[in-house]
Image (cartoon, rainbow, N blue to C red; front, side):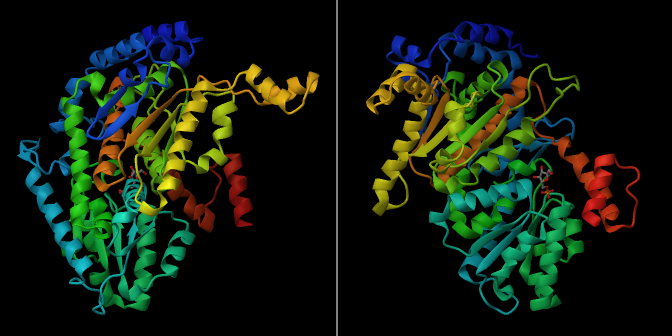
Length: 538
Ligand code: F6P
């Protein structure tokens, strides 16, 4: 059933002038009551303008939208991606201790486990030096060639889990800009480099172009015979990997029920497994599996993905805040905002509902961010004093991995908490005046300077706290956000699992290539494109 945000909008209208601090003043227990903790994670959403009434109404949306039924459909392999006629079963990839998962009457788990065992065996032998390069040397470097979901997941997780990386070094090439692959290959020894072509479809133009460049590089330095030893593929398209010349024993396949942006849990995670080892990769899966169980079994008010989703819906669809900043206070989560950008924007950036009708409310938000404290010295100015409200999602670990630098970790945590506190409290004009008076200013100049130093405050944020960024915790966090996206998508009534919006640009790029090369005319193009083509060719 289509949800209706009007009751929530009425509540928001009523509470528009309410200060979040007043909610704390009227409820001594607010911080506890407006947070969810489970399995070592704490999600605090008390620094938002959501009170008991708003929360009840938000939870009501889950009932109206039938989220519980859809959640059961998701986990049981129903074809909920109905514009592509597919199940959505990335959860099966981490169902390592769970029961059967049926698709079209067949349990997919034996296949999942078999592929995982093959990955494990391959990674173990590469890491040990039992699988070697054409020249018989152990592989020292891995290059993952992929884009979007075939790049962002392993690239993000490889950085995130650097303290656990004791295997070959990993590099990631995604952009069709030749500079990307040139720069990566530049520092590498072809004799000891394993090239992994990661592409679900094995047709993506950027990946196939980069794979061909890598092949040329390898053939030039190692010879044609090197291809079967130095290339592996992660794909659903075995015919195409064979046509490229990849040894079938080095192809790790998966099914079409794994969406690109949800694929890190299976073969697309191979580079990560090579780096951190199968044992740590299994912990990563276990963290996600634990989140799956939590999501399925917890009541809505105690359910991390559900509450994260509802806070998101409140800020975007009810309050009208069009963007959402993801702000990890963890340098190793450098690529997490980009990962969430694809996860959320490719999933929920849809303008029609499941039945093809126009979406009667806004689609998912613009997601962006950068680790703290770096962002503080860049864009936080706008978050604190700009005219638009940007809901912020902070995240921070209780401890880091550097035992000798705990004082720096304390400073990091202090900064994280200080930012959400500053957003909440702000600084009043009177407080700013007092500061200026102390500096000796008076009259109009005091007033003018004070106004620049006012922080409106009452700006919403949430904070996710975890113990330490281990493989298990990273698995939990990614699965938490995946399910958040799912819940938001179900409430909005959209298909979170297709991505038709990326197609048109791809088609036009293919058509423009011969125009730029001069073999076709630009006459059918619009005036701007024609002129740009002329200018670029000139
Ligand atoms: O351009 C969109 C997209 O299809 C993503 O959804 C996907 O993650 C990416 O391209 C890469 O696709 P593939 O793994 O098939 O190369």
